[in-house]
Image 1 (tube, rainbow, N blue to C red):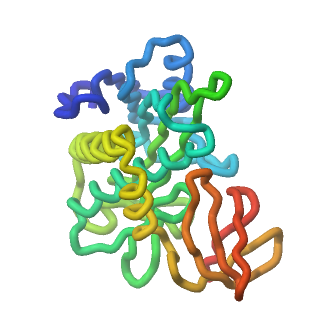
Image 2: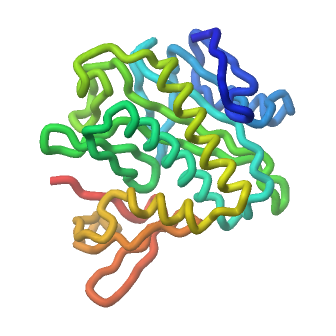
Length: 258
């Protein structure tokens, strides 16, 4: 995947392929800090050896089977209190890509950063997002968007994971997936630049896992049942318990899957 011609105007305008690296996010962050990365720069690798996920977890990926890449954005027009809206547009871009590839399947965005697919009567994790920001004073200078998507790997350490190949029973070209993600992420990024915030929030909320439904949560070690109401631009998850609405950050609440 060292030679890709993108049809987009921003995402993919600069493309770097590394046969192996510790973390595409780390590499892209270093480029951004040195001003070597254009907006839309993609850093892709066939073998990410120390990928990171949310909550300090490790993202494991079989070499040369999946997509593990990062996109550098320069969203100085986004307020610091609205950073999570970047997560929204990237999630929506990935969702649109998957809907084209797997039109018969249902997908959901599980807060804060996971992409789930419903397969064989269970929700399975197909991918994840990790966004790391570079801030100067009160300005968001750079955002490095790390994306991991299971494409052709079929054996996983965790039972909740799945790949496109496991669903379709056939090999999928990661290059095609990458080109489509670039196209659809750019689509939503341009909407963000055009200040179409209500459209983005609505589209994201409608595809949010457990939105408007009762679900079990682990909250500070206590099991509670509530209704997901949505996610704010600050990234906090709104859950209603009986008549009270509470807001939680990433470290305060977990979904429980029985």
